[in-house]
Length: 429
Ligand code: SF4
Image (cartoon, rainbow, N blue to C red; front, side, top):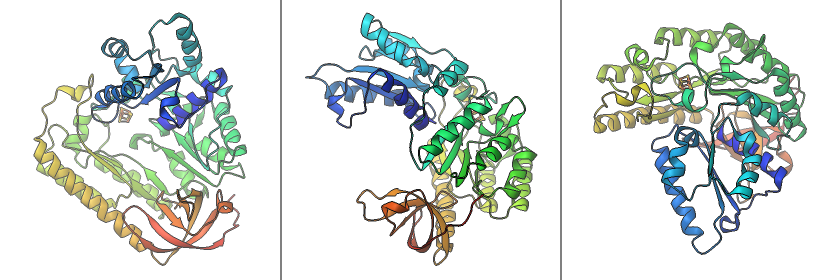
């Protein structure tokens, strides 16, 4: 979502004359869009500002703006602690960025914009075209969260759940398509909770699917409780909705899920998994795992390992728990660091085995690949499989944006390597 937000911020500041520069020292304005999910996010921001200061030691100081969730969480504190920062702007206020910059230039007054003004934000952004122009383009449909998992800062930094108006989203999808997008990735902190008037995520998918130029649709990130029957049903008929579902479970233990306030049990998660598999056996799952959550004992950890073995998750993420300021889990007693580290290693090696096995299985098979770009040295093409796995093959520039068939010759844990067969001009709608 930060990538989407950064692009939209750029679309906005272009209106007052800013351009991108790839030469760091040439910048008049330095904007850091921050994420609060990862460990030590706040300290990383101060560290980065230290680097900017060094770079500009003998030059005119650029305008320094901190945007995103760390700005939201820290607001005034940042301005006090680091005078090099000129203003902070939260994720629901960046539609005000131009007026804030212009005010600052005129009055040199430090400020923070951290209101949860999400309705005005999307109204404003709908008037500014999304110029992403990428084959695979992000489209935010929902923001914020009301679930309040005990470890998570999102409800505090992005605010309550908000679903963008349906027509606004469809218009943005059409604009992206006219600009070259072939894959639309619908985004939201709780994307499957999308609910605008009577429209759900399933309605959005089916409407976007009607756009002939759209070849693939994905959405992320989902909560297991919001995998509603209408959304599950879309997988029965949709030819464009990709068969990889990112459905974070976080832990395989009911005790830990309860303590995290995830509001579902493993057996409920399994029921959703089975329903989806029954409807479309091609569907695979990826997940997020928090290891060493306070109270996690050996049995809880084994339950997580067993769940991974049972469901064969691919493309998943795993992290050791680290407390976030202001959350309920902040003050809970931590699991011993060494134990958490050992557990993380075990989980990551199991996830990695799954990935290697799945990729190996594809060797000598021909798969559909959406071509996104050429590799950096321009000698090969880069695309993704239906399951988001990167594929490198002998494609050309004019393959970009097409779905082509690639015979997989080799693989490693993260990437498939293959040979272009023929362009499949098959109809996708
Ligand atoms: S559902 Fe996701 S975004 Fe919402 S509080 Fe839980 S982890 Fe955070």
